Image (cartoon, rainbow, N blue to C red; front, side):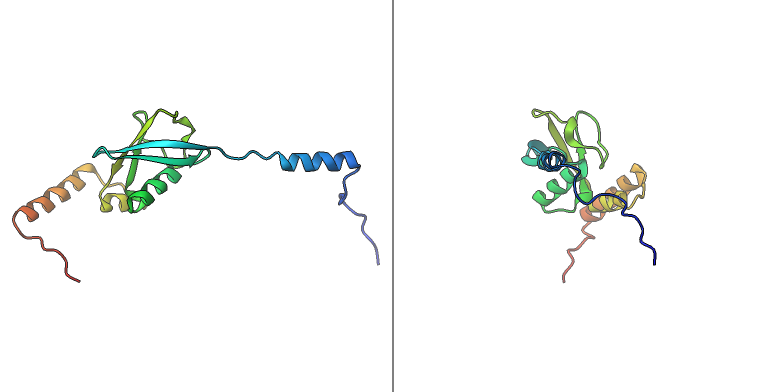
Length: 143
């Protein structure tokens, strides 16, 4: 049978190379934590410690956890812009406050599943719901 020559090295070429390899592994950066100030529309404020490498989606998940709702209902507005879920939060300075807008469960679920519903349709649904409530046609569900 034929032996193949060994490709690669299991041991460093020298003790100095071994020490340099260990030094590189030990110097991995540790993510820092920052506090994000989030403000709800009713004036309630949340101070949320977040890793500095967190994404907007991570921040939405944290807000939803604090409020006890599903994350797709959370809409963030920062510096007059609605950031994308995959954006990092590094664009926020320490004094910036993030506005939190809570969507209805329906619109949150639709957006999470990639369905775009025109504003007029959602407004019409809300108007119908209010009219039925005012007319006494809505009843609480009894389980």
